[in-house]
Image (cartoon, rainbow, N blue to C red; front, side, top):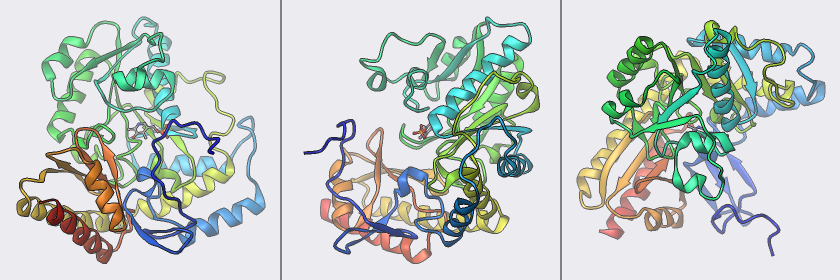
Length: 388
Ligand SMILES: *Cc1c(COP(=O)(O)O)cnc(C)c1O
């Protein structure tokens, strides 16, 4: 009998080791892992440089309190700011903590300029910003909030793509709009660049902040370091997590100096956030995934993958409704429920994961090899043919 709480519907399989794009069961069966811990292991399993980093740092220093200077964190924050819009970084341990901290920063900013009533956060209905009490109410999903009342006040919602409703929902109490540039759990809905631009303009006009949740779509997953970069928009606050630790739990909030100024000593903290062990790993991940060459490879191979997935859509027009996404944040939307398809992919040794709206999410490691993409395409083709 399992003594774990049954808050997950786990598949009846476990793994004993991983290497690159592959996972291995105890009896040596090999799976192509295109889940990668849900966009977490951006460099695949057991990357030699990450192993080396953790070995080295673990012999030196694991954890000290944020009461002291942490040079590894200074270094990672500097790298993140040099590569992005941000001026300052606040480290956390997870995505939900990062989105919550982002909300705190937005509220604290308006408090600090004498407008404490400007504190409401406007976000997309049925989006995903994590599972803490505030984050579930920010997501505005009935399924996630059911049984967890009372409702946390301060959150408003609009439907994805409903620009009229969005404008109507902005009031004098609104502090920020928070959206995922590409909805992950929600079914790989991409906000087009021109909409992100309009969103920025709208925020400027209404003098409110723009929070872009890059927890899933960020850290080079789309072929740019951040998914919003192609739009040239500059957000005010960006929570990140998943990929930045390459498998080690790290979260962070990136922000511009305007809002960072409000976060004075004592306003926020985290016992574990930004400890030397986490920061050492984050630095190595950042060094690898933020180079032009690495990003170009993500662009090149993901383009190849998407092109061929679209070919499969043409070949099986009654099964595949749409191929969505950007870079290696890919969704295959089916006409039918996706569970059976995912099960069949797994029977053929390809691991994928669901998202809302009958979408199968495909999240290869960012350093995936072409022949591994070909292997996945072959399996997807086979399952389509079987289900035809
Ligand atoms: C995964 C995710 C989160 C929550 O991250 P956790 O580490 O699970 O708390 C928040 N926002 C988005 C967009 C995510 O995909």
